Image (cartoon, rainbow over all chains, first blue to last red; front, top):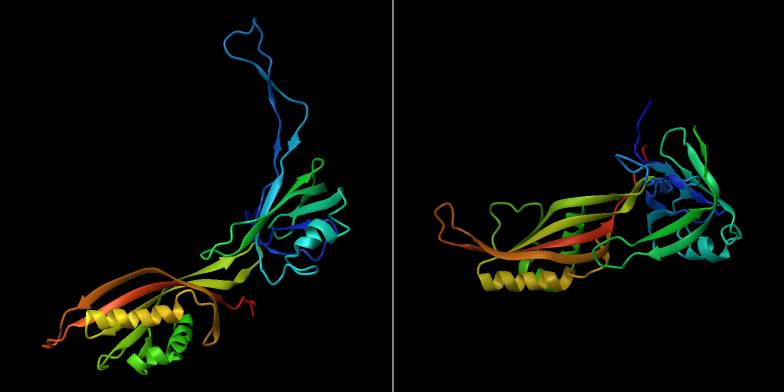
Length: 145
Length: 139
């Protein structure tokens, strides 16, 4: 067992190969579900609860440094490629794969779509950065490598 | 070293050179230097990383000390430095500066030493400078 940092982690959007920014953070996969209150008038002591049947897949936000000279089509930070031009990401069900930083590169992957692209405030005292958020459309397949 | 690059950039200014001549030093000045002078020191630097590697930009805080024989002259010299460097982006020596801004400044004096009766007047500015940096190749 070897616990490691996120060094080497990555995310791939469909078959898009031109969008390869310097990611500084990749949101962790998350699942949530409601806890349903089954308390009745006959319940004594404490309320009773039961888990909902279905999980909600959390959206994932990733942040990256943005190079202003690399934002045209085909460049590493191309906004057009990831949002509009690419045949991959304009299709709703493109596979989005998050790769962990472990040496063997375990993955989480499912069809998904991008829900937000946001450049951070442009200031004189911080590196330019942006974030992209995607939503998996089903629970991701987890592959331990 | 960014302080040497900034030293070269300041030295290329005829206005600054007109006051200090070649007395612009990176790190420290010799004990026998006479006249107005500048010392450029690297106080601290910060590197930036993505999840895959170090990125090719670094932030360095440089202290530029302006020495003169009166408080007014020290301030006037600092104004020449500010005019040259504050808000600058472009080539500096072998480096490329992406942005430069003053984050603090102060006036001070140094008491006479070694039986001298001459006070030294100093005006210091700290510049936060974003500049290029090579990305490690692990060779």
